[in-house]
Amino acid sequence: MQFRPATRLMDNAYLLLILTAAFWSGNFVVGRGIHDTVPPITLAWCRWMIAFLIVFPFALRYLRQDWPALKANAGILILLGIMGIGCFNSFAYIGLNDTTALNALVLQSSGPVFIAMATFICFGDRISRRQALGILISLTGALVIVARGDPGRLTALELNKGDAWIVAAFVTWAIYTAFLRMRPNIHTLSFLAVTFFVGITANTPFLVMEHLAGARMQPTVGAALAILYVAIFPGLVAYIFYNRGVELIGANRAAPFLHLVVLFGALLAIVLLGESLELYHVIGMALILPGVSLAARKP
Image (cartoon, rainbow, N blue to C red; front, side, top):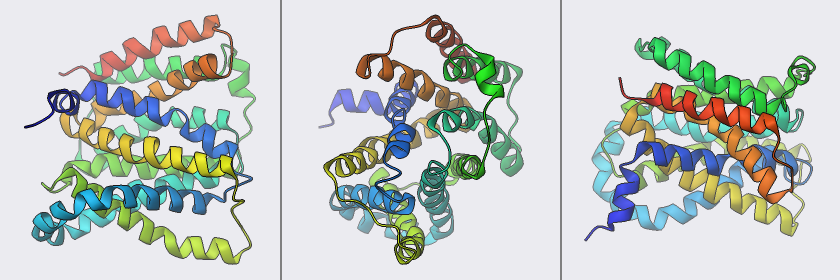
């Protein structure tokens, strides 16, 4: 017998994508916070190895069941594993070595635009005027929060090579999101296990190179907890939810939910770090929520 609340959750794209944004809200902050303790490729590799070890025992029976489909669709699975697992997180963590969490959040706000471009270039998808307006409104709200209500903070940003890595990360994420429509009809756990394994395999040579270059992880309790966090919540759980959300409503309608990451990050700072609720938080929220709703609404 199926657990009805879980079934309802997995059929509710909006709730899945909202929870995904909530889990992702701490990813850039954590990645930036431990960049002196855990090298970027090491962080990405450990993240996905832990997620793979968690999911593999549960996926084993489905991997056997789905083996013919896995072999027949090896190409698209390798592409999704390299783009969404191998490249995206590694590029983001490399970028966070040389840029600030503020810059990363600003650049992350462009994610829906990259996804719209990727779906158009790869599949000819066009977004409606309503979707474009919703993306613009929610993007404005995200930037209001990031800039703390002061446009001068955005114009004063200094871009560097770290920001180029962040942009590259979101290009790979856009490709991943666009090509999710070609995911074969296999069990979710099979898909996760295979793509996690592909990403780990793709990152292993670079992990070795990083180690040979002298980069070492400092074995601290804080580093261990941070790795566990990014592996379980922004990693395993969020990928299950995001993949299902895109499957239900499509890439372009799912993309604006990325702007909720900024909103949740601000709320976490208020609740956990004692920051005060300011007018710019309210303005940003008043723009993000209706913007996302407008862009995600079914035509």
